[in-house]
Length: 274
DNA sequence: ATCACGACCTGGAGGC
DNA sequence: TGCCTCCAGGTCGTGA
Image 1 (tube, rainbow, N blue to C red):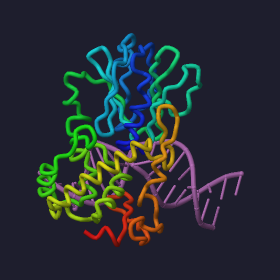
Image 2: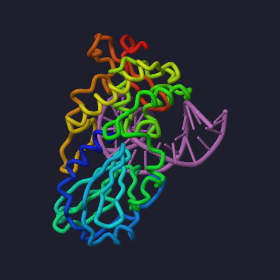
Image 3: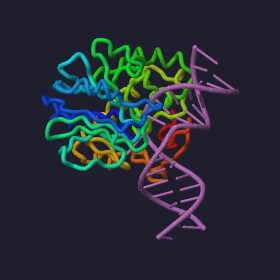
Image 4: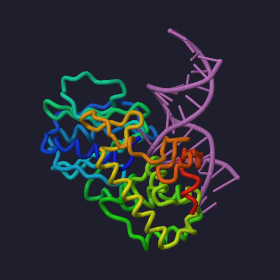
């Protein structure tokens, strides 16, 4: 579900939690991604700490505290972070509850593909989840020459390339299709065929697609909501994703769907010819 | 070493 | 109504 724009939307709607003091911690006891359980003892050790900031890198969210530790969260496919009154009943699949006085910060994740951890800020860049991440296209920017050089060393497709979190952090399956349509590149194009010019166009397309989605508070195709429970509106603005047989907004050809590496890809067979 | 695939989970949608 | 199959925004380990 959540790609960079959705995580950024969550980050922004969590900002009212800055300044709040952690009053309690609870976990369901069930494992999340790879069966790993959120670290209840480390979370309980943060009782009394104050939340001082919220950062995002790619699809990862970091909640900083006034201690040397930060809380690391990844929403997987169905993860949600919500701020709700502490009196509100827990919905099914609630896996972490961090009490903030009268409010709770709750992590809810039906499929349990998400991640939740406590990290030492001083060494966070060595954390397995963060160590291999590429640059964040919004906060770090993307260097055309570096990306072009990397593309030339690979034999994979351009779609797999931009989905690789070690290359670019934050692009997921929806925005990969959208960015490739915007850049007019065939998803199956091999990366070593990218030129300096098409690499630049690809970077511009990725950034435009992500920025536009952030402006629209993310894409809610099925069940994405922000920390206040609101759905994003970017689904209204998708050019190709989930638009099988609908007209291409550029040339009116029917949008096609193909499966690459087990993931659905939507594209225009006419104007994504390169 | 690189790349593509299946597995990990649950729920919703659609067909019969 | 109910059962069955398929599909889903992510990531990792496996085996080719």
